[in-house]
Structures are given as C-alpha cells and as structure tokens.
Image (cartoon, rainbow, N blue to C red; front, side, top):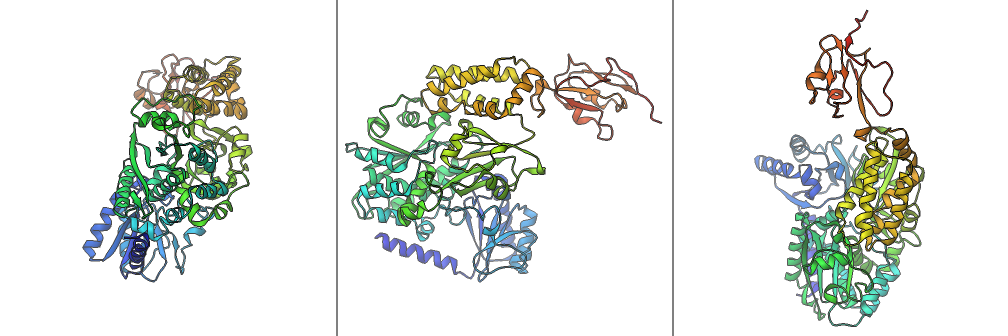
Length: 637
C-alpha cells in the first residue's frame, strides 16, 4: 500500500470518528494524569456509562499540558464544541455524566473551557485561557488531541508528510532546510541542528547512526516523557528524516527505564510503523532503509552526555570521554553518529512539512522557534508548556503559570535543571532565549523551569542541586569528582552553622576551577547553581556564616525552638510529644526546652495548641525573657 493510500485511509478513519453521532470522551492518560487518579476516573466512567446504557467512544490521550488540572477529560457531543473538565474526582465524574451527557447541562461551574466551533454560555474558549493563549504548539501539536497508540490518528493530522516530502528531496536539501529554520538542539547547549547534521553527513562511511537522547534526568523536568507518551510518532518521524539526511541506516532511542509508559508507547508506535511500511528496508517505496532499537538506561544522569550515552548503548559503563573526536566523526562503535534529544527530533517533521521560513517566523534572531518547559515548583499552574523563544520570564510565571500560591514573593527562577542557574526576581523581564539565559549565568538546558518563592533558602537549595550532581558524577575526572565534593562540603558546613569567613570566596574559586577543567558537561555546568546563588544572593551566604541565621527558616541546624513564658499554660502537650524528653516542666509550669537535648524536630511547635502559640521557631539569637528553668504559670486576670 502506498503512503497516499495509507493517508487516505487514515483521514477517512479520523473523519468518521469526528462525524460520529456518538458522544466522544478524551481522557488524559499520561503519567501525570494517572498519578492524579485518571485510572479511577476511567473506571467510574465505564461503570456509569454501562449502568445508564450510554453509548460513547472513550479515547485515551496524552498530556495536553495542564498538569495542575489533572485528572482531565474532554467531552465531545455531536454538533457542539467540546468541553474540558479538570481536577476530577469519581463523584464529579458521576455528576458530569448525569448533568451533561444526559440532561445536556454542561456545568459551567465545573468546566475549564471549550474548543471547536461555537460557544457554550458561561464557558470560555480553552485556548483563550491565560495558561494557553501565549503558547504556540509545534512540538506538542498532537499531545492531548490524538490516541498516541493509533498511528492513523497521527497520519490523519499530517503525520509522515514531512518524511514523504524529505524523501522527494536530496539529503543535502533536507539539511539546508533545517539550517534555514534556525533549529538549535533542545537538549542543553543549543548547538545548530543543521550544522550538526552537516558534520555527520560529510564524514565518509557506509555505516552511520542516529540517536534520540531521551535520558531526561533533571529534577523537575518531564517534557520528554510527556511528549513521548502523547505523540511518539512525531519523534520517530524526525529521526527518520535525520537518518535520511545524514545517510544512517540504524537508530537508537536511549530512554531511562523509569519511563515505562513512554517505552510502551514507543514500542507500539515502532510496530505500527513496520506494519505500514514506514520503517524497514524500503520506506515508502523509496529504497531508503532504516531500523530503530530502544535502549533502556538505568537512570544515570551522566548518561545524558553524548559520549557516556554511546558507551552505555555499547554495553560499557556510562562514562564520558574526551573530545575530539566528536560523535559525528567517531561515535557509536567508532562510526559517524548524530545525537539529538526528543524535543529536537519532534520539531524536524513539522519544519520539513511546513517549511523553514514558517518555523523561523517564531522566536528571536538567534533563537528560532519554540521551546518546551516543565513549569514546576512554587507556581499556581504547574504543567508542560510550549512558548515562542523570546517570551519573558514574567509572562511565563504570571500569565501562563498564574503566579505564586498565596501571593508570596518570588525569589528566583531556576532554569536548566541542576546544570542551570538561578535567575533572581530583579531579572523577571529577561527574555527566554539561549543568549539571555547564558548572560544571566544560567542555561536553557532541556527545559526544566522551577519557581522559587520567599520561603526557600538559596544556600540550602544550592546544596540540594550540588548533592544531586555530586552523587551523579561518574568520577572519571578529578575536577568533577573532588571539586563537586569539596563544594558540597562547604555548603553543608554553611547550612549547619560551621561556615567561616572566606568560604564564599573559596566556593567561587572551586566553582570556576570545576567549570573550566571538567571533562564533560556534567562537571562543566554543575557549578552554575553555586555561582549564580553567590552572584545574586550573597547576602544569604553572609547571613548564614556571620549571623548563623537562616531567614527562610529552612536550615534545620540554624533553627532553635523556645517556649514563651507569657504564652505557655503548662498543658504538658509539648512535653508529652517530645521524642527526646528535651522539655522540662510540670503542670501549670512554664516549660523550658533543653537546647543541648533538642534535635530541632519541630514536633513541639506543631502540637502546641493554636490558641496558645507558645512555642516559637527562631533562627538567630535567643529571644529575651526565656527562663533557664521552669517557672509557675502567671495567672491571667
């Protein structure tokens, strides 16, 4: 069957589904949806529909990006715009079935928005909502809209058109189109994709490889997982185009084993491609051969580095090597190899299908197109977003993200994961592009974006990221192995009250040394959190070192608990709950905490009745008036 026949059949299947007189319900069944309870919602949905004898078509889809609103469904009734409902519970699901599916009341009080032609009173258009209006979906174009396990849905929505077009072009023409688009690698450093392909294309050899880097390891990052779960064919099609352009016959998807749903959907997608003749020995009758294998990684962060990843695929320990030679010259098994990450590959098919100029119309002069981010941390609307390059951090946080819970003050935004840096509130209007983030001391990275509010201690969170990178260091080179350990030791001392004058300067010196002398990207970027936190929040370091105080009240060793004599009623609740018997005093006596015995667990603070609020949490000097021994409670007049 030719591709035109395959496409015609897929479009007919899609139109038949769209024009069906049956009610259709799309339910988000990505990992975020399942974690929020989507499987329970699906069970209730099936039970209620069977009990009420309602005929519907239920379609599992990937994440549309509104992770804060999961579990989420889209209800499509014939002749009406679809309605989205979020934050569902089994009880709310039953109500929606009774009120909308049966009584035709769309419940505006529960609906998030509508899409499609027409409107429903009291319900806004979904893509007019602040969370979605600024977004431009290229990489995520199909996520939440199609069944990721049905290849016909992908094809009916323009899938494999880019591959068909590429196969009618010469390989060099494909590379030139990618160059003109301005697409840069979305996995970290932002190297020009077309130039990278050109290097591999130009190296002679009958055996070449392409690799998809799906080893997403940044804390708080979930862009690649959601994309592979919601639209695996977009990534696979991009790999096929890249392989054709550089002359590769075989490819690997290197994905961490912690992503079982993504792996499952990739395997299904590859099997379907084989059935449709879209992968194998004669793709689309063009004579182009290409096969893809999946390699499951064990979750080592360092294997996100290209040379370490290739070592792992070859069955060796995942450790980086020095470059040159670069992978394009001598990569997998010594053969020319091109590596791009999940998001980069997913953009390729759209660029070829719609043209380089179309793609380059988004973004900035040097940072073209769009970028996916996982918006996480202290933000109202967490989720997966895709925005044009050049958008400001302010717009991402306050318009798309809805700001910070409880209207707390923004302290910083961390981009680029543990390899990135902290951008302070004073730079909130910074445009999000490669050059601006680098100038601010951070990186784009793969797209993690963590919002940090006033309750976070910058020294403590820097210690958290250094703990991660130090543990993930492969240990091959001394600057990274020992440098990250020494930096971490100093940070631990500072957060535990042992900091001393000169520690900040020593931290900076170590950070610069590790950054400039480490073998691979892990070590070269691990100091970024240290350097940016000192650059923008040095006062917090000085506070910890000089005053032995943590104003954010996060460094446990710098916190003490005291009982206020004018508030304590001698009720004994705190004393009874103290796990180390550090509280002295009997009934109707003002209690006293023995600071030598206290382990700063905070239980006394938690159990003290709010009407008394006698226990205080302090970082810094002891409050005045605290007795050394228990004294009688002063009777209230």
